[in-house]
Image 1 (tube, rainbow, N blue to C red):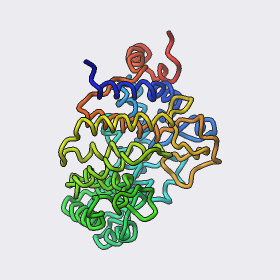
Image 2: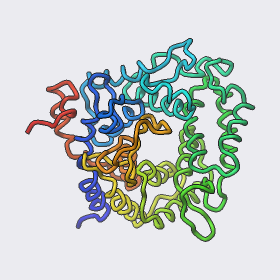
Image 3: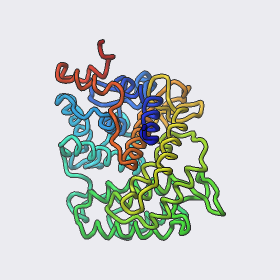
Image 4: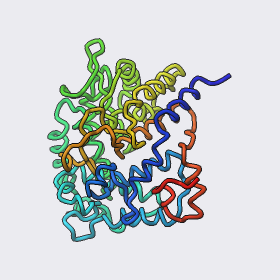
Length: 395
């Protein structure tokens, strides 16, 4: 007898994700070894970017393309290492795309995200940064970002950034600082900074729901409480990324399941995958989900993700009519908004693939390779290049 959970997972894969790998191949830039965020970015003359390139490797691995030609991986390593700033540079240790330098250096959140994506991807590839990371010489080092040069500076940053009712934007900013804290070489000082942040965030958590939600966040109402997953996901990521216990984890789990049951539509793909990843991230601290919750979770993703599949095979960033280009999650977007209907987006596709991975892990299943993965693996030993993905495989 067929298992309803396996059937639901298989249906989701076949309906919404079959075009992901061919689309991903079109985003590859053989010259740099990096990936574009979307077809419209490539056609507009924009450059590949750090975040999209990190996302591309994540998508490949989660799609089942785990054995790649050494030349491809070496080019990826070179891409990231070449973007790290050397000692003596004002941004020493950070990773910056030359094409987006002006936009990246004006926002600490973007720099911190690029640092995390670059170091994380290099570690996956068995490589290391070319130079010391920011703060790698101890707490007194001038290379430490200003917000962590003293405990008072960090406390002031937390107060200014999180405020009293932190929601998505505030918790996203906090989550982006994981990589900054992890780069602080003085373990005792790093621990004190982490304690300050965790205490501050926990004191501003909604006590009844466990959620972090601001007045302006998109939320659903339940018995006088506002439920919103996005800020909560970022808060959970901060705690788990720094090996800290998530406060009120069981209340977060219950609130997230309620939020799913009351959310009938979604307009933004990067936010779409947050619920499943949140539930996966706290799974070690809460009772396991019941089968009916798992089945509802899979069917919810399958139903809502249908609207995000773009004609080019990727996943659209939004159901809104205008697509804006945001390499490295830069804001405001670059270039003029264009018709969103035809363009898959790397951030959106990576988020949905992460949600797929999280749902399978929660269900105790291993994801099957996506269509096209086996063909790529067979072609790699012959071509020793990424051309088999960059172009349609021959029949």
